[in-house]
Length: 166
Image (cartoon, rainbow, N blue to C red; front, side, top):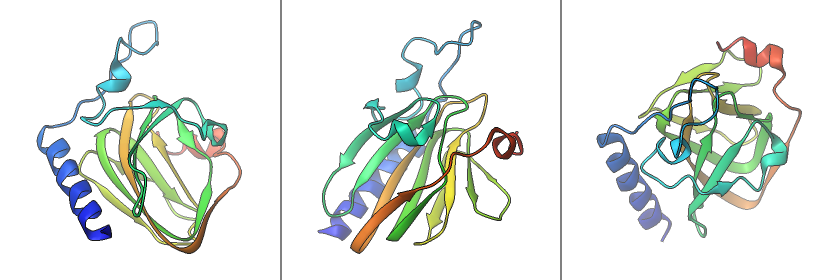
């Protein structure tokens, strides 16, 4: 069952990447252009992220697969990023589908992300990910959870830390 879900996610990601994805646009006034949240990826952006308390800025979440191997499409407005966090007894795989963003592990340099990039986050690694200051960003988040898996939200990514990625 897990292999079937992962194969489905891989096929959906390939379709998104082959379509070229789309980067959302921002109007001259700095507000999201109409429907830009839904233009970042071929996957639906979903609703405002229920975990928004752990983000700086606005993000959206659409669960694509809820059971076995959860897969969610996460969309970030420009400048949005999640807090530092750790997946205990769980590996996270990020499949970038649109826009431009960043991933950083604690103590390491940030990595710029583009459509087609894959990030494998091992269990117990403190990290964050989010959009570039001037771009919408979208990725599929695949959770490969072990027994008793949990997520620990830590401190926000400071403006100083985030400023290093520009």
